[in-house]
Amino acid sequence: FTYNSVISACATGEAWSHALQVLHDMDDVRVDRDAISYNSALSGCVYGGGWSQAVQLLHDMADCHVDRDTDTYQKSINVCDTDEQWVLALQLLREAVDSRQDMNIVLCSAALRTCWNSGQLQLASQLLAQMRGLCVDTSTFNSALAACFLCEEWPLALLLLREMADISVKRDGTTYFEAIGACAQGLQWR
Image (cartoon, rainbow, N blue to C red):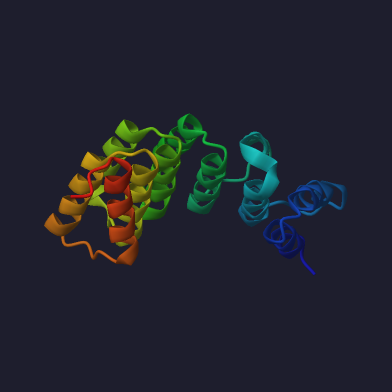
């Protein structure tokens, strides 16, 4: 039995408060917490701890001199998505880059999704433009198109479809569903 396994199981099973309790109990038995411990607990914040608990865990990591890794930032940004905390998501992305973490597709996609889901389409478009040097994939574009659907931004949906073709990104059923949905929402079905 390891503490990290228990934290992960609790977080995955949506028992996030138990995951946090086990993390804090590690001090009582003098077991060092590491990035895996914190990352597992951060996963649980998606289910109920929320962004404020995630921020607290990030502060705890700094206080305990535990280095944040790419997984830490990705999980933290995912928590921001559930609570529409797009400003915090962008701050975390910037912090990840400043701390020399790879600005990879996973981190950028998480921040992009948070911006889209929070209705910050212009920021999301700017982030998508910055991601062009990375391996932008179908999933990334589908997230952007889903936001266009939700926000009735059919012109942007059409631009994204064109961009996918221009840079040879594979389009799938979800791609077309989201693009058609955005056009239908904007009454541009012809």
